[in-house]
Image (cartoon, rainbow, N blue to C red; front, side):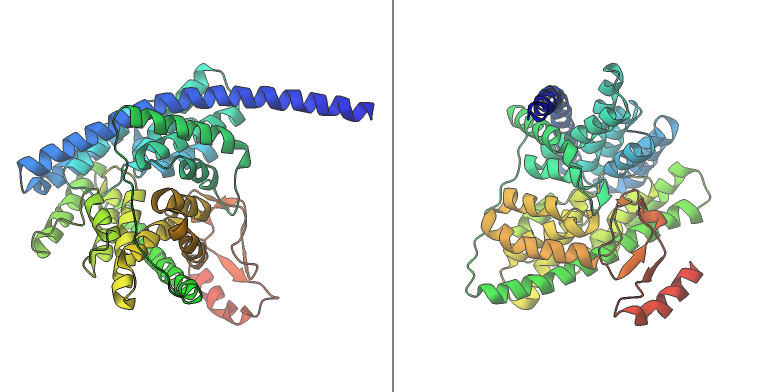
Amino acid sequence: MKKSLLRDFAEGTVMIASTFKWIVLAIFVGGIVGGATAGFLKLLEMSCNITSQTWKYYYLLMPAAFFLSSLLVVKIAPDAEGHGTEKVIQAIHQKSGKIDFKVIPIKLFSTIVTIMFGGSAGKEGPCAQIGGGIASFFSGIFKMDKIDRKKLVVCGVSAGFAGVFGTPVAGAVFAAEVLYVGKFSYSVLLPSLIASYVSYFVNIFLGVHHVAYSIDFTINNNVKMFANMIIFGVFIGLVAMIFIRVLMLIEHFFQEKFNIYKPLKGIIGGAIIVLLIFVLGGNTDAIGLGTNIIDNAIEGNCVGAGDFIIKMFTTSITLGSGGSGGILTPIFYIGATAGNVWGQLVHGNIGLYSAIGMVALLAACANTPLAAIIMSMELFGVDAASFASIACVVSYLIVGHKSVYPTQIIAFSKSESIDMKMECEIREANKFKISGKSKYVIFNEIVQKVNKES
């Protein structure tokens, strides 16, 4: 008994000291990242207002904006390339959380230049990378080891996420969930949660406005709605599969097929989007952040049937050709507009389907169903989230082992019927086989043929 008490005392003391240490560190990082995030969001809003309100054809400068964005990244901070969250995941897995401090100002400026002239990208990726970069910088000052550095960087990611969307719990869960497919990092949950809340409070104090949605809906038949959500989840999972493939193909096209100076690819990408706008009769809904379209869809107003498809291409071209920014805001746009169209087709509550489509696509594209469910609670309320949870999990399963973040590590297969390489990045797991004990073994011939070709 005495030994047990001594063991409990030692364990309890260490846990209290460790918890206090991480509470202090999380508050510190959350405060600084919150301030940096608020500054970035204010600058971005001001820049977008200047361009869109002073010149109707501001998007004509998109090729030059992509060129400048890519040039800055190539010359000064190559790690600032693409959508920021992916680079942070890569840094955590491959560099023990080390992020070049130059990434912070370059990512901030290149993203503003990209989006203010119509680039289809998001604001959460830069904030995640800014947050991760700040945390990495201070981990060096504090002489942290690899494990603590990675943990602090995850706190920075959660603080950046919470600052952008105003969803502190979802921000913390997203940061703990996004690193792996099928594995949740419980050890970072408390500091991530504290950093998220501190960042959220700092953003509110500095005047950052976060959208709050109110969805009016009545469910007459819960069983029917439950079944509808399963079918809707399958639809969103298929939309996610298409988007990920489009993103990968266009990124591969610009990176591998064009053997020219990288910034010149930005000119080509920007020109393609400008041409697309003219083909669409000057419609600019699918460029820029597109938050007004997301809001419109969730309010229950009908959107165009092809809006979510067009957004897939403008986002993929923007990020693939050299534009800078995040990918979650486009995911929300695609999910909300796809849900809106689905609601029109089934004569359902358009606002509800738009809202659920938004979070369900996040669950599928980022492999973060828990974060998506919690985000639906924070944005839309518990009643809507109870149905959103079904669509989120179904879409997460339907998309399979694919992601907009190719450096996520596969910890577990999503199905016992699929045997694939574990503990590797998603981009490396391009071959799998159907389990010999599975009733789906009939598909093995198809899978083996594809594996040989790849």
